[in-house]
Every structure is written in C-alpha cells, then in structure tokens.
Length: 290
Image (cartoon, rainbow, N blue to C red):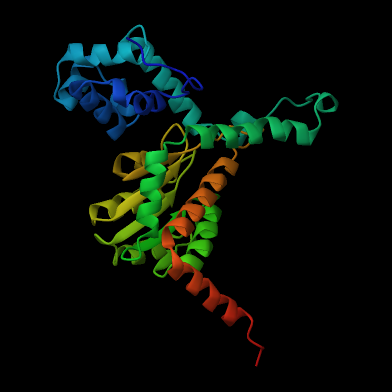
C-alpha cells in the first residue's frame, strides 16, 4: 500500500521516507535508514547492494519502493538522479526568463505567492516532535550551544546565537571560517549541542565540522532543505524547510521562521529565571555611559 499524501506531495524521496516512517515494518525501516545514511547515493546502487547494506532481503527493498509510491526501483533511481541535479543547481541554472511579464504580477504579489507560501508550508509540515526535541537540546543550560552555517546561512546562525545569548549562558557563534571551527571542536563533547545550517549547494567544511562534532559526542541540530545536507546522517534532530523562492535564488525565509519558533520555545521552557536574566540585561543596558 502506498503511503498517504494528505498534505503537499513530498518533493523528495527523503521526504517520502520521513513521512512514511509510521507505515514501515522494522525491516523496511532499516532500508530507509540505509538510504538516508548516504543520501541519495545509497539509492543509486543495485537492489541487491542496498539490501546488503541494510541487512535485509532484496524483496524487502522492493516492498519499500512500492510503499513509497514508485512502480519500480528504476523509477526511484530516476527521481534520485533528478534530485542530484537539483542539489547542484545555482543562480545561473535557476535564472528566470530574460523578459518576464512583470506588469501582470507586481513584485510584492510574486513574493507573497512564493516566499509566503514557502513559509506557511514549512511551518505546517515541520515535525513538531523533532522541533520540541531541538528546543530541549538548545534550552538545556547544562549543555553548551555552538552555532555555525554556510556562506549565506551563517546569518541565520548568528541571528539565533544573538537571541540565545540573551536567554541562556554558554552560547558560541562561529564565523564561516575553518580555523575557528577547528579550534571550537577541541572543546566539543557529550555536553555540546551543535546547531548547524546547511542548504543547497552544501558546504563541505560545514558538513565536516558537524560530522566531527558528532564523532566527539556532540548532538547536532541541523537546519537544511528537503534534499538533505550530507550532514543529515549525523544529525540528532533534522529541521527541514522548503527553499523554493523567486528565481534565481532559493529562499531562507522559512528557515528564519523556524529559528524564531526555536527562540519562542526556549523562552517558554525557561521559566522565571529567564525573566530575572532579562531584567539584569535591561539594567546593564540602561546604565549611564561613563
């Protein structure tokens, strides 16, 4: 039986796998985990090779493919190859037609239609359980929080870090700089939460930072798009948002909406001690300059 698509039809195989988890048998879940652990490359090998990787039989792989709604494994692979192309698409490939009919649709109306829809869709489809677990990790004052991102998404990491620094101690923002990240990894351990932003086209240095942090025992909260950063296999919590915006660029507005949802969640989980902290901050900022 194919999984239900009561909401937006999932755009990627990864979305289908995550949406259908409740319908899979334990053996099928192992196939799904194998696919996501090396996504999407794991799905581009043969049925027999994927079955061996997952430790199941070839018919189990075939049954999972059918549950995902594909008529056969070859069709699944066609989808994955298309995703590989979409992953690497940049502004040049996404550039709009040279003479769009702008008079028929004003700029604000087009942005409302694309960006506004992306934000609404992302918040509606985000897994509330994963969001709550991410908030729990980020709000835990017994854990340090280290944040970083890619060339553009680092602005989201810094934005979240500025808020978190007001709400709790032990927050560090890392510039998109390899030396700074390598130095920070020296102190990462079991009581560390790494909040990492990585979107198409993915940043190899960001991915390696997250993977090394996970190897050192840190928990990774990953913000990414539906095609999934290669860091997804090492993430403790995965927060995906739609990134389709007005061409030629992707939109990170939905990611910012999730960032602000995280901030609200931390506020609500902090209790009276947060009020005292904010009152102390207000006293500091109200001081007369010397």
